[in-house]
Amino acid sequence: MRETAMVLAVLVTAGALSSGCASPRARNSGRLDVAANFFPIAEMARRTGGDRVSVSNLTPAGVEPHDLELTSRQVDAILDADVVFYLGGRFQPAIAAVARRRTGRTVDLFDHVPPTGGDPHFWQNPRLLARAADVVTTQLAAADAAHGDAIRANGRRYREELLALDGEFERGLETCARRDIVTAHAAFGYLAKRYGLTQRAVAGLAPETEPDAARLAVLGDEIRAKGVTTVFYEDLVSPSVAQALAREAHVKAAVLSPLEGLTAAQTRAGATYFTVMRKNLAALRAALDCE
Image (cartoon, rainbow, N blue to C red; front, side):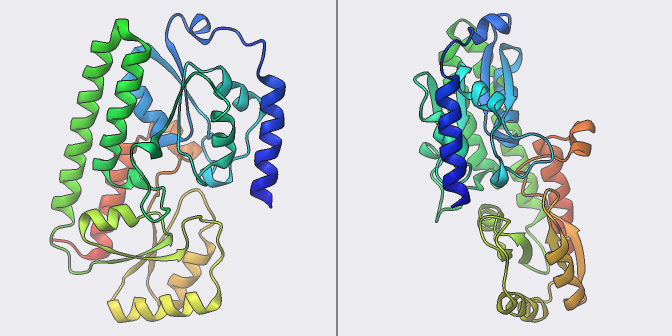
């Protein structure tokens, strides 16, 4: 019900704001005005577009994207952008509802990197993010054909960095004493599949899902049976359940970021997808006793 009400409210707001908007490119000195639904996609658009784009991240720092409720300014940013990149389905239905009203260049990246089993978190596999980056590069180069060569060169460099990161994870997780990870919510399925791990999640695909006592008891048994040393919690949602499970099982608790957004502190420190992923790799190697 909350999700339906949110979408209806957004559609009403979108209808009220859908006229009288100034040209985005005029406001940005000829640069493309790009709206992206959340952190990994916004960073990807900035990296591939370079100085030819002005990117609005629709999910502010410190906000869990599953919980996003759009303001009128954010609705305006979607409707008025030259290009919009978002993830459809149930990941952020409020953004999808407004994006579908547009007539301009609007790209649902799930059309190009389809979710497996309803899991939206494909950016946890750098190779899948590289596939999405190819789409973003193509769309931006088409939208600004005069600077298409520069945009495509940016896209190639970004893809190479993603493939290099994938290699770091392959090597870093190749020889580990353990292969099971216990996570706060099921955001790491693509990562686990890519690098031969088994994800055991406290909550489901959305972090606000509350686990019941039976689920926590099962996880406690699995932690002991598999020799798990660490329960991972996240940086944008309350760690209380994961930390309580860790205490009950007498193991450590540590951060493993689903990279759905940055905290305000991370933003101030200049964190990127790559720096956070490398911190995740270090946390995984410590928990899994990798050589």
